[in-house]
Image (cartoon, rainbow, N blue to C red; front, top):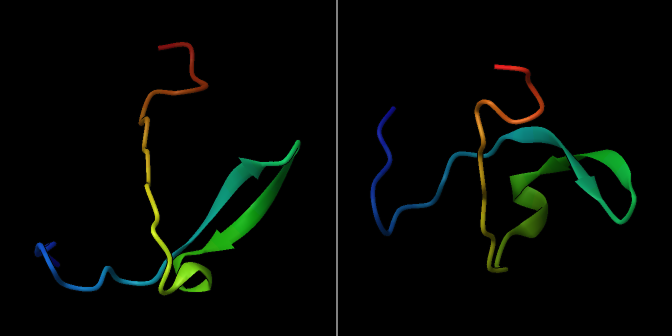
Length: 47
């Protein structure tokens, strides 16, 4: 699956840290809002 500028991103669920705790988040929960996603593939590892 490719990503195209100007097209809707596919929905997904991820675990994240927010307001002092961990939780599950779905991209579709933020529909019609601005969203910035950051991915650090080596974060929290001892690589």
